Each structure stands twice: as C-alpha cells, then as structure tokens.
Length: 79
Image (cartoon, rainbow, N blue to C red; front, side):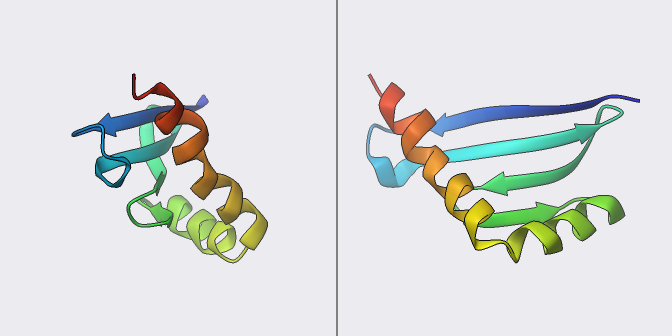
C-alpha cells in the first residue's frame, strides 16, 4: 500500500481571489481526502476520507496551517 499527497494551485488569473490551493491525499492511488482553499476545510471522498476530514476539521491548528498554504505556496508563485 502507498500513501501520497499532491499539492496544486489553480490560477484562473493573477487576482488572489481567483487562485485556489488544493491538497489531495491518496491511498493505493485513490484520492480519499482533499483540502480546498475555496472551501476552507477538508472533504472526505471515501469512508476513510470522511472520518479523517471530520477529525481534521475539528483541529483549528491544522485548519489554520492548511488555509495559510494558499499564501505560502500559491500567491508567492503568481509571477
């Protein structure tokens, strides 16, 4: 079994409001959990993902770090 994570920024323009940070979590090549800056929280895509999303969304520290990634990862790379 393999676990991996993919981070991406979707740039529809250089306006920060139009930029979305997404972090997807995979297990055995199946995406089970995703954080989207547009939503501001984790979303579970499988039974395992739903359980993890519920746990992670209750942790304000983890949410704060995830929400900051749009600035840290995406906005610094607009150019």
